[in-house]
Image (cartoon, rainbow, N blue to C red; front, side):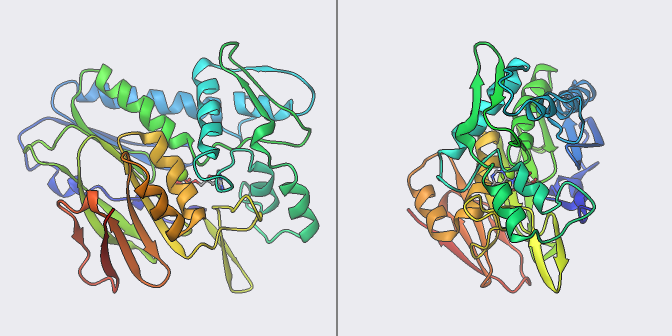
Length: 342
Ligand code: ADP
Ligand code: MG
């Protein structure tokens, strides 16, 4: 069970609902194993919200690993038998993006992680620490380079039997990208798409200001770490607190280090990535969580298109300088806040 899924990140615009005279349309729905909240302000809002739900639900149907009829389930079912499975053009594109994501911080992101997720029982109600043998068998099947995608033919195949793709680390980012396009195509210009931990803010608030997005405190998800002022970006957060189980007093979470097959223990409790590219934000939040503080900050220094909030296990909140405008720390969370400069 996902704990408090509806609190993944709490857009503070809720506090302002009804305080403007502008029309507002909002909707909550369940997709991709999480609760999603979409709000549009201004004209065409109802159409935009409807278009977002349709877009996300369509992708969910294509990508779900628990639905045996989905394209990804078909791809997985044919692993190793030589069949190039026909997929929708955007699914082929997503698979290619997932492969590209593995190259960002090598060793930290792999879309063929599914056998390891299964070994831990993360896809079932029976979560458990796997035996050493089960884990090494599963890990031997994790190999992103054995996923072959042909975007032109719109097909994909897995080269070895037993391999499986799990798009959990990228699907919501990709959905956000398509949902934003659908939102704008419907004629709406302002709103918030909260796709379970991936918050996309579009345009500006009815009063003209930037949106305010709260980042959850990974140690107490009813509180928040900080509030960010954002416009036209996605803020994606990954943390060990989202999905986990306990065995013999030890907590095991769902973000796996593909090099070991174990839940990543990098010294970070959560990573928030802010970017105009929703796919990049989603994959990097997972990838940087696995990589840890030092590598994450090195990576940030080499790029112009992301900003980060890192929450460390020793009580620090690191904020990259591009987020300092309008940044508000929580007052009483017991964290120390540091701005990281290039
Ligand atoms: P959430 O789904 O809670 O928003 P993430 O975006 O961090 O969190 O994605 C975690 C999901 O990604 C896992 O549930 C699993 O499906 C998948 N996953 C876990 N570890 C990895 C990894 N190292 N590389 C790619 N995907 C991963
Ligand atoms: Mg992610």
